[in-house]
Image (cartoon, rainbow over all chains, first blue to last red):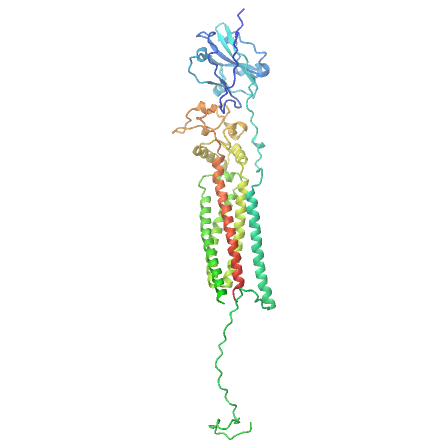
Length: 252
Length: 256
């Protein structure tokens, strides 16, 4: 009877630093466990990641050998799978490796359906729980604890976006009201001025009370009075004036 | 009386000055509106796609109103100097018509600027960016505009790359989430146009992707455009109002 695997106290978790893509709709990232398996791992051992639906993690049974490892494509039926087979040396204290592991990043193996351990994208938002499993030649040697449930992102339809503006800007109200009043004043003034002129010319009244009204007076040219010619035949002139008339004098 | 003559000359001088200012402002309005209509920031396809490019209509009206103001100001100057009732009456009526058009342009520009919220651009981007068949010409224009916008301004999405994660989109239909949490244009690109660090970009490691949204780059020019048309037009109209009142006063006092 093989010895049960050692339970390590490490809890896998999503990295705490600010990474925008650490949880997406089909992938999530995990902080790489460092120095966790030292003391339990040999050079030939491999560390696997077991991923299970959160409500199926309690019923997960460690595989007895590498041949029993549940593959990626059985996730919908078996509710769990194992992936990310890595040499134990990659998780040792002295390893220089990226601090983050990404689960679900390999789209090629999903499409081609290979039998190798496939780190394919997760088909549903979950939630999922993960644990690391150190597998030796004779079976699992050590395991970490299950992580907290990891819920993936769920995208909503853009039809839920309401494009209407939240409030009418005050600028529009100011511009519209002031312009409308200016326009109304102008229209009233023009109509008023035209109406007053029409009224004035109809009634022929003198509207000269306006201080500005200028009536220019055309100066009439009054010619000096010409001497009126005497009517023919009237010779009633004071003595001495009509002396050049040859006609006989007639009564006035 | 000599004093009344002085008042008349002062009024004439003021009206001529007022008309000179209107003429110059008309030219400035025309120049400004031509600049906006020439689409200097390449945002016209985005506005056209919102079916709400009345800001461009307002700018087009502004071009013609500016030219009309310039022509009418010359007419006004001639009318004031010659003290001709007919010319000034024609001037007043045509100015009122121009006033009405410019009023429409200002209010249109101001109102439609208000309706260009981030949600409008977000919804449009999600529904049409990288839309696969059937994609209309305006969809392709929109995709090209967004790509250039994101490339030149080093921005991503409307509010940020998480736009692509929070909502499903036309982009998501053709690009799976694991390989393309957001478009490649959101990654920091090298001289050849390839991402500097593709895994870093997919994970969202700061420095390998553009984390800020493009809404600032869109709303900046659109705001300048709308407020340039609306507020400058408003200022011109206030000045024109005073000049028109003075002209009507002068007209009513001219001898027959």
